[in-house]
Length: 113
Length: 115
Image (cartoon, rainbow over all chains, first blue to last red; front, side):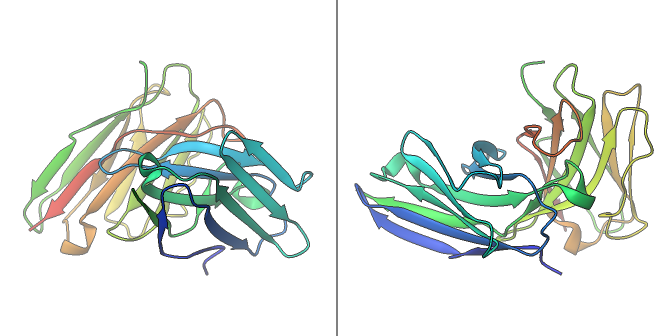
């Protein structure tokens, strides 16, 4: 049973455009929703995270939008740059999983110059 | 250390051999996790350790997989009688505690190829 579903699998965006990646979860006990960024040959690194008591969190060009009733959250990358080209993973934790993160399958983002 | 350290970074082994993968977490981190990342797939949870508590082994795919953590620090993931489907990147991570919301820091992974 896949508890966190992520889409799209891949995404191509022009430089300066907006990249949007979506995730949906099933377990209403989840209480922490991070996004991780992974470059080739590297381990994933935390990019931004949100708790369900807020609907939006912004850090620089990166924004998480959270819809608790729909059990969905999304990552928006404004003014996308070629350096943002990476694989992005959404994740969730809480409830029975404790601190262990349940990950989506990832989105490979390519930003064209 | 400055970050989570894993070794070897790359390992090629023959089918049927045993392999050991090592993880040295960030100093002071009490929680340690192992994940597996197959080509084009997400991160699959394998096992985690929190302090002196019994590890959560619920993600181990078969009894060929085991892990231990000595002295609350270094961990070793062992795969016995390796199969080709075991080929993947094995990622170790650590955090200050296994509580939801604690940032989990990943190493760069051990790339395992079974031929």
